[in-house]
Length: 239
Image (cartoon, rainbow, N blue to C red; front, side, top):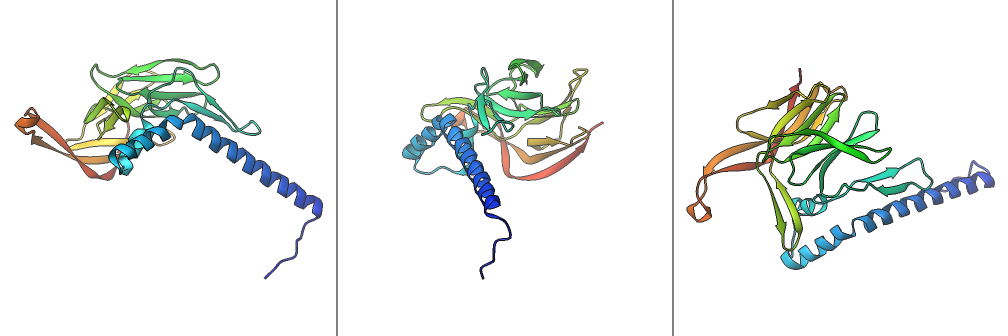
């Protein structure tokens, strides 16, 4: 059943103009995203030609590994994308509470970096023990949390390029004011994708059950950690 318009022709023109502006802005954003990530699309295409099928985790690894940091300025008309220099190979990123800075990790590194958005200056905010790999960084208030170590590997795949395969690790909580760090050790569990409450007093993370098994001699022998593929959500109250 048709309805009569309850607004004037001039209002209709304003509505049409605003709809066109939103569509044009969305088109530009989509085009910029595709252009910026064209290498990822090419990797997916090459991977499909090589392996024929890819599951969700494999696609995620292709898309998330080796990305750079892009800032979307919503105050501009139309919204504009800006690639931040010196941010290649980022594995995780989070924004500070005030939105003035971001914290990020790089593939196969143990460092947490802080980037000030106003001038693109960055520094090392924290370093974990040598030999570890940090990722899944989150910041709230003066607290920083990251997944460190565990079952994670980095390799340069001949088809996909640099890949960081992550099956979870230990949760580290860092006080950004004092530098004090605490490891939330839970036997038989590795964690992924932590999230802090806005005040930084509570932490939620995916928990995966781990089992220690013996590696076959054909693969070098020794102990191996098998990580389950079903996650529970764990809640931690932080002191």
